[in-house]
Image (cartoon, rainbow, N blue to C red; front, side):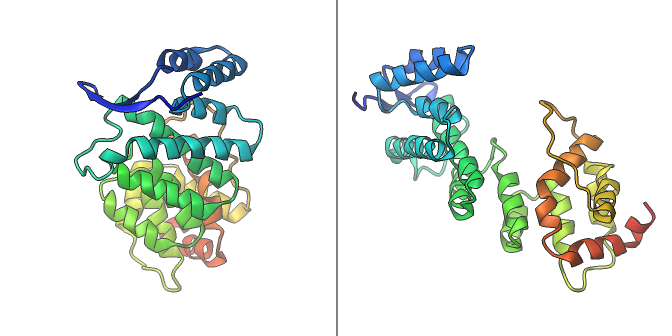
Length: 264
């Protein structure tokens, strides 16, 4: 087995060209996990630089330790092969299909590290992805926002607010409210922020009030698709950010004391 994949640039942008490409395509299209794993191993027997082969094997790995090892190997290979482009400030990383296997590997590694409770490792991976691709087509900012809110690292939350000032996805205004509620003396006039939340999801404040008063928080959704702005969408946010909202009692106490919330 040899590392044959190499960086090339053509009309479709930069990519890693190697002899296992057709096998990788076949692997992604395979109908069963067993077939995908078999083809991924075949791809690596042809080229040890086949990044997506590690992605496929990592996705189907039987243990978390194996997942992390496989995804880490893929990220290291990608970093080595794409090294000539890392300092190119005009490089549109997600804009080229050929760079996505490496970016998927980093995303997968970060998620696996999160599962392993290695927060520092996950944060490092996610911050690198944000720096690499500020357009954030992978939604990394929401993962970073949740981790930062859960750990009380509100300065990192504010950095994300600054990078994405026009992001009105429910995670952003709701987390801004959370941070304000964490203060000993939060602002009394939050009309504009509450309006932003209602415009993003009209159900969230009522659902949050119900969770705060009952102590029963929604479970993570298993649905393949959740409509933005729906009650299910609000439940999804609360399931993900429960630990952030409950990390200190005064956060929910201050929230429930808001006049606008008492009238819900």
